Picture 1 (cartoon, helix red, strand yellow):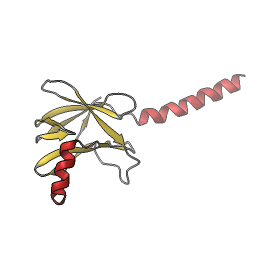
Picture 2 (tube, one colour; picture 1 turned 60 degrees about the horizontal axis):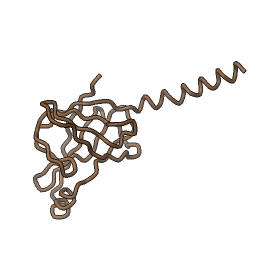
Picture 3 (cartoon, helix red, strand yellow; picture 1 turned 60 degrees about the vertical axis):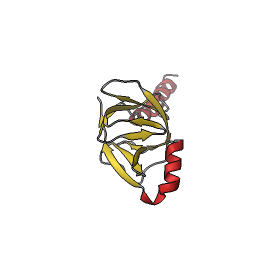
Length: 142
């Protein structure tokens, strides 16, 4: 009986440790340009970005200068071919407007693609040849 209890405890620990390794915590980003997440517009500044729940599908963004938290949807993608050397936000610049496109976290084999809003889909449809990307570093919080 004791052997079964020890085996069950070890199995439970093996399941918890990988789950904790994939946890993403709050990060800060100094974004030097105005940007959009979906259809919401944000001014340049320092923002706190974090998952709002353990599923890491709904994310929260809040300006450090004060202001309300806003939520957005980001779908978790499969593994990346190459892990980023540092956590980054990837913005897509289309028609002179910057849209948050992706969140990549170092040490995590997953990345998150941000859902496109109506405005981004419309601008992309008319300016698809002029799209470029910009990376912004994230600073993980302890």
